[in-house]
Every structure is written in structure tokens, then in C-alpha cells.
View 1 (tube, rainbow, N blue to C red):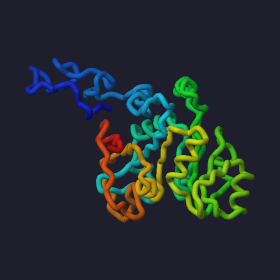
View 2: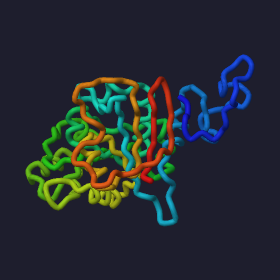
View 3: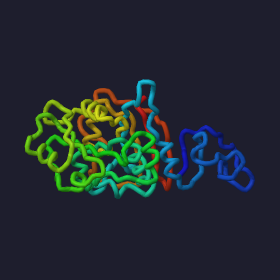
View 4: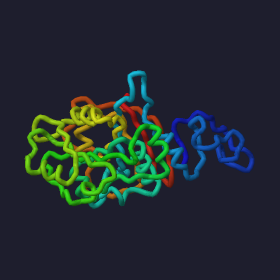
Length: 284
């Protein structure tokens, strides 16, 4: 993996004898991925380096900042899935970043349809991140929060029956009482985040923060991400651009109605490995 942006080290204008400009080992070539940010070193980054590259904003004088980031993958032609799943357009580096983002988060927010399609399982504890999570005051693994208006979920799945941290279910006040009781019976914690049947994104963020979850991560799907974008509550997008073309009618990373005024985000970081681009954008 190598960092393409931000670049703070200048690449020589001409190649030194016997090498390419900026090649590892060439005069003036940046060294290592962490440094000052201008690395072209093409090697596998450690999990600690990835965690540093994707760190949440530090806490301020008033305490931790509530921060909602999304992590999504898209092909060159804009598809967020192939045959209904994101795995076919991913790769090993993307999955390492996926795991790192989960390990940094307090809670993973996901839509009910994605739970059904992707076969979601509970987040697991990872020994590599245990010390960092303990130092940050986090539990052994992030909770999973499922957003569902209908509560049409299979509560016999391990996500509900055997998570390391109890699964949360975000729903509206008008949710069917019988389904809510089924969720609670399965061991899930039901959190009301909407006055009607559906979930209101701003209320969901506030409800999670009230539970002590300030480092929020959503993995979609497209419908949920579209709702978060429309509500103006998304702070950061981590987007993997997969060097694939799939055509067809697959969903984009965000769906639903368009916003009145497009939201502007700024590029914070861009990494590359095997043709895959790993970008971070923050609300500007």
C-alpha cells in the first residue's frame, strides 16, 4: 500500500541514474507510510499504521466529538454491489481497512436489508486492537445497531442470539409491539429513534451518543446511507474505488431522494494498493 495524498515530500523532477523518480531507495524518495504523509512505499501496512491513518478526531475540551463515518465500496462504473453483495468487488486490502474501521468504532450502524443480504454476524474482538480499545475506554468489540422500521428481522441469527456486545435495534415509536418484544426476547436492545414507524437519522445519532457511542461507523446499505446524507448527519465518507466494471443495474452507494443542495466534502487521504483506491472525505 502507498499513500498518494496528502503529499508533503517533493518527488525529484528527473529520475536519478538507474532509477525512477521517487522510487524507494532513490535520492529524495519518501520513506515509510506514516512519516509526513507523502509516502510512495508500496508494502503491506501494519494494522497499527492503518489505525493511525483512520483515527477518529481527538476529544476536545468538552469531551469526545460525536462523529459518524461511512465505509463503502464502489466499482469504476458506480456499482456498490455485484449480485446483491459487496464482497465480489472488494479485495484483501479493502477487508483489512474494513476490519480496522470496525475496531476503531464504538458502534456499527447498518440497515436491515444489508443485514439480510450480507448475512451480518456480530463484531468480534480482535487481540491486535484490545489494548487500544481498552485505553480508549471501549468494550472488546463494537456493538452493531440495526436500523429497521418494520423489525422484519430473523432474531434467531447469531447477530442477536450470541453477540459479544448486545446488538441494538433502532426503530420508530410506532413499531409493531409484537416485533419489538421479539427483538428484546432475543437479547437485542431496542432504541426508539423516531416519532413514527421509521428512524430519524438525527435522532438515531443522538440516541447512540446518549448511550456513550460517539465514534459511529455505518456500512450502509445504500438506502440507509442516502437517508443519512439527506439528513445532513454524515461527517466522513471512507470510499474504496474498486478497479472493476460490472454494468447491470446495481445500486449506487447511496440511494433515495436527492438533496436540495449537494453536500460538499473535502479529500483528507488517498491510499492505493493493487489498483484499488482508498479515499477519505470529510464534510467541508
